Every structure is written in C-alpha cells, then in structure tokens.
Length: 169
Image (cartoon, rainbow, N blue to C red; front, top):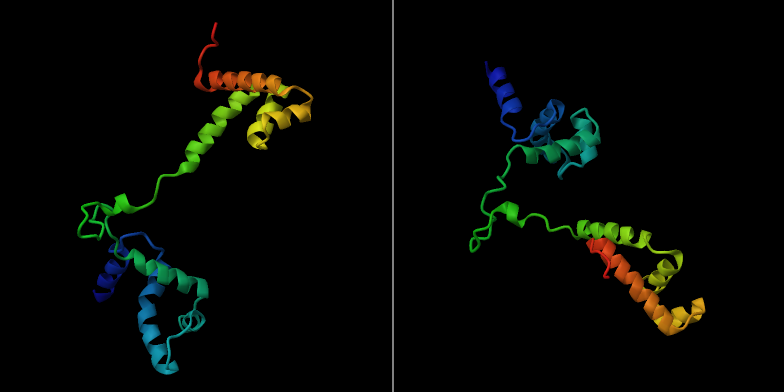
C-alpha cells in the first residue's frame, strides 16, 4: 500500500512531465547529498553523486533541473512587484525586432529586383557603401546631376513596388 502511495506521488503530482528514471534519481539526490556531505565533510560533486547513485553525471544534472518541474508558477500570477498589478507573463520576453527587419528586407528585395543593373549599382553604392552622389558619378563616369536623377528614379520605382502604388502619369 505504501509503495502505491509513493508511486502515485512520484508519477502524478509533478507539474511538468519528467521521465521516470530522472524522477527516481531526483528523489534520491537529497538523501544521498546529505549522506555524502557527512562522509566527505563538504558538498559532493556531480561526479561523486553520480557514482553514489550508480548513474551518469548527465542524469544527475537532469535530475537537479527536473526538481524545478515539481512545482510551477502560473504565468497569470502576480509578477512579484507589489506596486505593480502586471502578471508574470507580461514581464517575460520582449518584442522581436528581427521579424520587422526581415519583412522590410523582403519588400525591399522585391523593389530592387525590378531595377536594371545600373540603377541597382547606384542604389547599392549610395546606401550600401555610403558614397556621395559625386563619388558615385566619378566611379561610374557620369555627372553628379545624372546620378541624382537616376537615384531618384530608382527610389521612386522601389517605393512604387514596395507600396504597390501605380506610376504617376
């Protein structure tokens, strides 16, 4: 009867499912730690616990981590700051800026694909390399005014593609 009660608590009351061998080890760790502390005169190492429990070090580490799975805190519980009414879930994580950046790049790529090679090169030199219009003109053999017109036309075309705006008449 006592064995059944122990099995029930071992297998059913954990908040997160943990494999049975890890549960068994995690239950034996406190007793073995206390025994080894008395024998060694200090806290045992993971290797010493593993040897005493007849298991490997990785299983002992997993069992230590699994002990945190016995009790959990609700994500809708108060966040701990008594002056604040926010739930714990409101304090976790942050907004990921990478998604917006990836969407912007995907939209920009669609706009760049519709430019000819010369326009693409001018946009790259201007925004990718940070060159001035005069530097681009000298590099490509055009006047600064011509580069300015080409760049403006390329940016207008990209804007139309990205924003799906029809060309002006």
